[in-house]
Image (tube, rainbow, N blue to C red; front, side, top):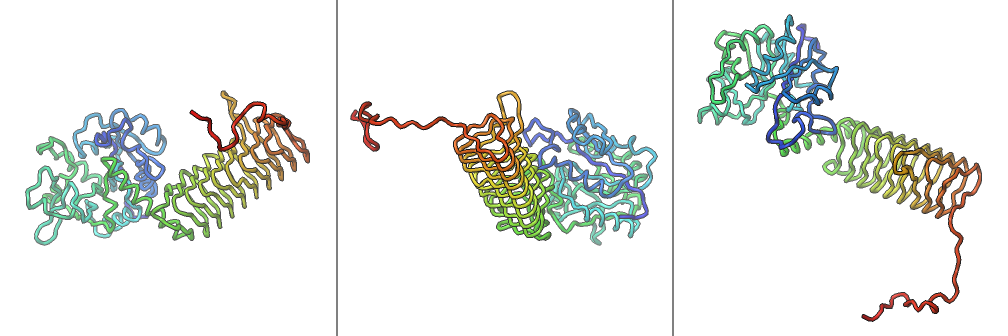
Length: 448
């Protein structure tokens, strides 16, 4: 969205996340299949800023590694407050003139349209400072005068009983003129209950100096949710799932029970596909049109063509690619395999590291044995081949086109085109065996 003013974005991501009780940096905790920091970075990139700076804490090498090339990273070695954190980005924004948007790495639910609305509001009204607020009793309260004019932000640790009753809270998102930002932060001290440099203090400085400012309430209080605990992470995940479910339904997908369907944010699904309850669809999965994903199926970073049927209780592991019309039934697992059009594996099978031609069929209990204890090997099953029930294909092996593997076979050599492969012990019936051995009849039990 063009507003005529250059934009820089600073994302504060240096929090330790002590309440998470984790060895993982807080902003790398997963939300909708991605690190939570990915969401503010995505939103920032969508605004096409001239500069994007992420402020990280000590021991944040994994954060830099995860998002390398997408931002400039600067370190806040000492935790001395939000204002101090923003000051760490000053050198990276040297020479920048325009608006600075300040976001938080642990506040991932901010929508792009809200940030665009902030930019439009600030530009239209000629404001030097615009704060995004929410009608929620957040840790920072928005204090207004009798005429409703924005006066300051007070932290709950420093608030009076009257101020604690204020219901409008500070989300922590600021859009501020760069020149004013640095001048104001130079005047902020740490004389407060926490002994920190509060970014919120720039509001009172703007009021004192007669700068035009305001707080703009969001129309979605979920956007204000900051994540500091596992419970808040779960709450944010639930919000994100609802948003994802609404998006795919708006695109023509039927979710039988949206609240019992778990879709990661990056999942894409074609119209007229039906998802039954209990399904978990993760990662970068792509599903075509008119598919049916039956109950309790798990799909991880896989690709499905049109008219595919899965489940119930099927499992596609990463790297699986199913062409149009494939049918995978209950308790079938597919891993890192390409299944051509119309392939069928209706129940109780494992297909791993395999390339399967169009129209091939796997009987109940058939297994692709892809691991020799040291290395993984690939198996090729060509078009229209038939794998009988309870067969084992010991990789690497090829079942050529139209070949047939007899039920119960353990195949260690390739089966030629149009041939029958049989690899099992010959049945032998021993007459009178029970009488000679004295074995009990079925259903009878030896006396104790």
